[in-house]
Image 1: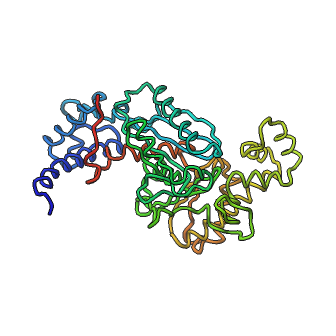
Image 2: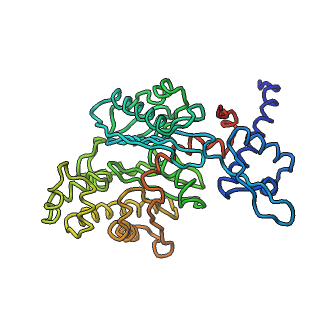
Image 3: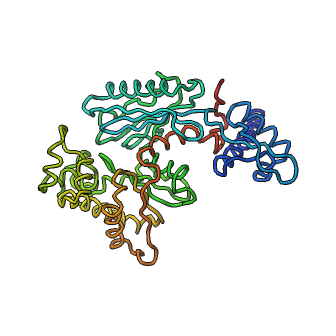
Length: 414
């Protein structure tokens, strides 16, 4: 039986958290507001707003930033988010590198750094790289560590139902079923959240990027691997088993290249960076050979992109082949999920005419309603910071979007 005293006692606390989050969300989305404007926007009474704002200022989550324009009486005092009121550490874990950043409450970045890794190093070494990198960005950010609310790690894998470990990561297999979240929590004494990288990108796009106001969209990450984050009715869709968005392992050529997941011809083997480099170097043109041959390191995607921009035919064709394969898959996928917009989160997105236009053209051949309902294929406005910012959103979202679970969020200590 429910403890009536406990349930009754929790309601005022939840209501307080909901109202605080409402005030924070309005200011985050609409910009600085006066107390009177907040009362009108929230529908709360003036005394209630005064009490809520006072608490938020006392907790250093809001700050007074000066006077606004007068409408006939005294000039109102304006309120805004205090960027240094709370922080999150966002981490982007990939098969080639780890990036980390300390992110302020206004989602600006206080400090960031990266380190290269080798998947063959194994779990313990990769965990140590991550630990040292997180310590580095916290140190370089000069923030009060007591105001760091948590650590969010974006990863290229499939998560457990409890979201505390990675079940499958074909490009980082040593992390599979390892207690990554618990190990980081134990070391830093902070809450740790794991999320699939493409979903983190989609969340950042929805909160901070060009997807604000778009209820249904797909965010596609193209890098060493290929993944996507699906947003339906304004919410990240994870599916029953957490597999939603795993477009990289759709088999599109059954006799195609081997994939790290063990299958052949996965979409990732035709679209991701290694596939582009492989195709370009299969029969490199003179310009590509001359340009990439000057590099001391092995040929990489940056070399291919630059050669393509200089007009090398083999580099151009390798990029277009990737775009056509992705466009075909997305066109077919649109016939199932019926969304309005696709964001491409990749350095390839800068190649609008060469890459994005090829996706749009191919997609239109496979999407049934392409003529009646043109789909927007757009570059992400956040670039490669999307994963880190998305993880910061997950950590600090309860300040702006309260629910019964987040009603117990800790206020940062001074």
